[in-house]
Image (tube, rainbow, N blue to C red; front, side, top):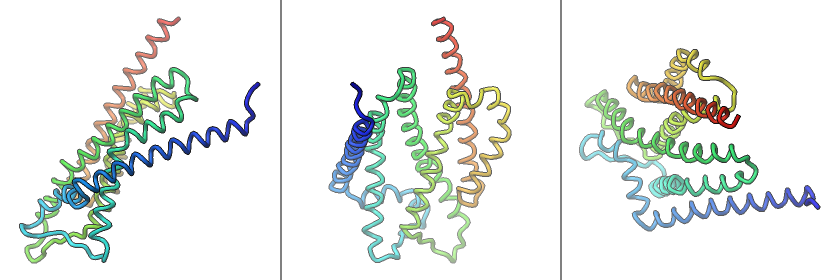
Length: 250
């Protein structure tokens, strides 16, 4: 006898709740550890280092809100906890959807999850170590001597999060290209044909997302175009591997 549809639906809800609780607990556990050591202040100071390095010596950032000096470092710590616990979060998502996948889908899904996580973190690292240092020094060089820059820490956090998300998503372009080819929505030939349109779109997106300076726009549009080419190469390689596998099975 097969289980009633209601029982199956309820069992899926219970499984989903269990996976979500485990993911949340993993983030909270990392947050507690980071809150105790090294502490929110140290973590925020590390995040603010690219900005502080571009300010005049002795200048610090400011906080205009009453509880901002407490809340902003706590938010940064929570976001850091999520990034550290991301493999566990993605594993819970994988464990929930894996039973409903075919064998060939499982073989594709797990590498995609791992590679997308790694690429997103690499995008954040590129933004922090390359983009921030370059952009902040470029902007500081244009500041008149009569002005003393003193950025607000909450505005800085919003800017940093926007850039992290922008570059993290940008570094996911190879995954998107591979999925488009793998699912049959397009072909490698068509992707090569629209290369010019992609380059134009990359610079338009960079102009909208990044600050209004040429350097940051190039630092976003350049990797986007390069990663698009990497995605085409990977998609072409996977397509050839699938063709060889099908021929061998036949």
